[in-house]
Image 1: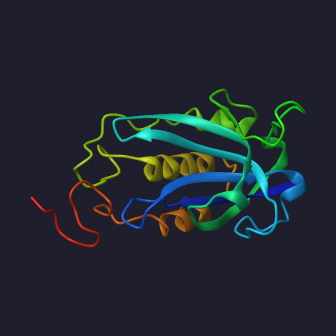
Image 2: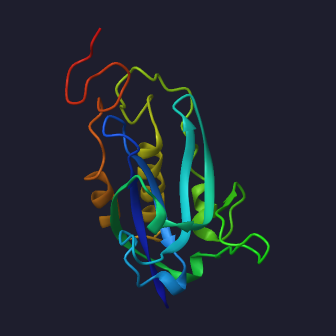
Length: 183
């Protein structure tokens, strides 16, 4: 069966903020492209949660241009997924090259993402603890573990993504980067 790569996108708008984690699956015609190469077009589907620590929601972005993401800090290949798990959504001729933002899943990988509840009600000043204070990095880790449990992704993907996470206190509240709380 044909496969496609699945990547972790690590997006950091500011060096003092926690990185935003998302998964990215390139379209078949871009599957051999390097998503970190800004000179080479690479479009596909981004799966992530958006919002604030108090309320996040699941979002799917089709036709996402990875090569145009200005705040992209790292692109990390997590492994490969079976092509049959993906239903690609393309913009219509009238929509042109714009990104299509959706909340309804298409394909099994996206449906599996709906099984993982987006984080809610976190304390923006507390350390990220992966239990009561969770954000996009923790949701992404849960999603990857879920895919592994379902046999849709190799277990090594979880270790690869874990190595990319920010420390629990990084970018939280009134904490200087790499330092103790200011209060």
